[in-house]
Length: 130
Image (tube, rainbow, N blue to C red; front, side, top):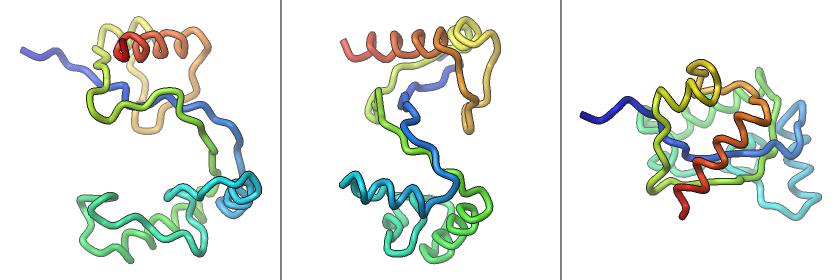
């Protein structure tokens, strides 16, 4: 039987934080970086629906929902990826979660973590790469 687990798909470090998507877009432009698809500004079209959301059948509707969300909860974090593995991300068991965090944290919108927990997650990611 497979033990209950999560997968460590990515470790992100917040580089800059902006109060809205427009300011974030300006930062990307000034730094010569392409706009990420989640930066909801005019002129930055959405990804094709088959690459974004399997629950919606209308790209314009899907995009409108996210544009409204960006206006109401506009904080935008520019991040750099320290680890990304979409093919075979390392598992994190319930026991590992409790050892790292002392509890099972929210994972859909995770809280900030302390340096010790961060270091433990990086070690898990690095072990998986070897």
